[in-house]
Image (cartoon, rainbow, N blue to C red; front, top):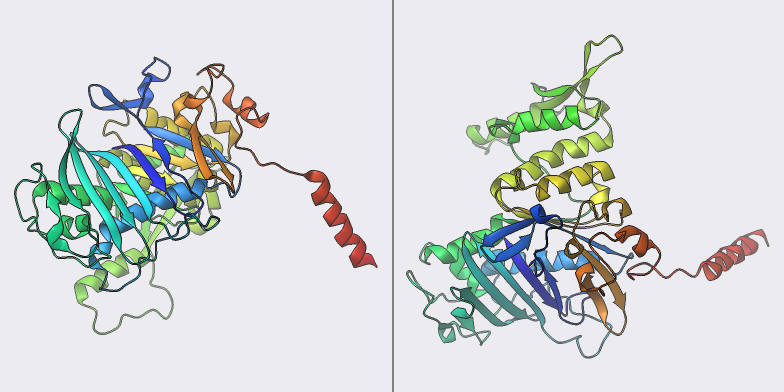
Length: 427
């Protein structure tokens, strides 16, 4: 589970921004929307991020994706390779050559950690991992020099297994140690937390969960969803089709791999609809709506996230889901009877119907705004003055501009420019 995430000098984010899922005020409003990693540590199960176009909402998700890349992939980068995910804030001379900084506090099981990394185009300048056994952190390792792996310092919390791993300046120590069988179990568990438990989906990402229909209970979930969420579908099944015309396997591919690929290519989903006489009519997936096709891929994914207790970040959730279906997914994540593995859903959106006190607490809604002087800034509704209550009409106040985070539109200038273009075209 993620406690909080801090980012500085990344894309449109200039100054340090703290995105927190920690529940500071444990009131009774939507108490079920909170998970407890420890008795006193309440964490939000879902958070919505609102803001105008180009305000920087997506960059928060890209920052999480970049941190994951540094941890999971950088250990394989070759000596001298550039760190291509170095993207500093470019609208200020103060930041253009300064390092990007990420910090994340998280739980792996019952163990709480904090990881910090700073880097530029060529080197990881600083890296540190702490563990919280008490209220004060205990250091596991600290890397203060980018290019000398022998200077990494280890705290008393680093126990068992190999400590020293050789690395290039562009390799994260956590990436090298976490992906080695010689490291202690807890280092591999941290590495695999980022590799397996954090998912970032862009607005255009295509999601496929391989062989999900073979997992116990998944087909029942999809049938329930399609039949009970007003899709007009009474059920689905898979049929075996034919390989695409002209398709052939290269001779070098082993038979076992050919069989697996062929199974995937010939698997065809069909959907059952009832006609006006009550009889079932089978439709090929090609005849289904775009929305049905999307939900057919997304629901297995969301279900697996809930089963595994993962954290998923989704950009523009409304591009994938109808508002009512998005609300249903959010409710499933917030439901303590469903979300028993402490999965977390963080998403950006423009959908005002989701900004509702009937769905969210104040601390579950963030607003993003951007200025040239300060870059993108993220503020929770919980940080507004006391006039904003959990029962306040969030969406109404937001639309009225009382909370900020909406685009400033000069209609007259835009309209005049179009009139000018029309006049030029007619001249």
